[in-house]
Image (tube, rainbow, N blue to C red):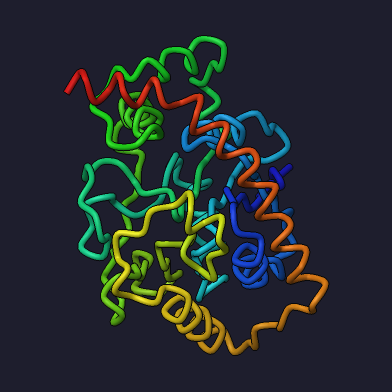
Length: 268
């Protein structure tokens, strides 16, 4: 009897409005969509691995907008059929604003084969090990990707990417040249509230990110032949309240993590 592939969409989300706009581009696939809030950059992946009700996770950032849903779902099937554990965009790709490590995929879009990864995953042993920062790290989640590449060599499929015409966003393409999605970056600067302006730095103040991201969203919807649904007044109020809740968790997290950041700087 053929195994029925269990797929879920996962999103690490801070801005609820962006999440709703992004989710609308893949919810029609009919698979569960999970919004994870208040997760650390690496804890997000560990949380996904706890979910044993799915085989394949399609990880989509809230500021990543899918332009070809059929191509994305085909990649999920490809991961399952060919045994790829991770499909995504190299963090040193031509379309990525910052230059990270080539072997690590930036988590704005990934297809994770959890069925394969769980064959070697032991949270009790690995989570403490990976949190020790034993690897060359740019971001906390780098440890997870280094472990995965070491444990499953040659099982990461890197996709073609290029810079969008706006000079910042990243366009991602599958192995057949189909445009999968566009990722805006600077999600926190999308209609920022006074809380964001206080707690979140913006190293590109010369650009109106809200306008830029709105254009990218519109492009994605046009490419899909869809129209973005305008949020009601109640939905907008709910999104603002949700942002207050997110900051109420994030600020204490940052304060608690301050000694670790200072320690890393001193070690450098």
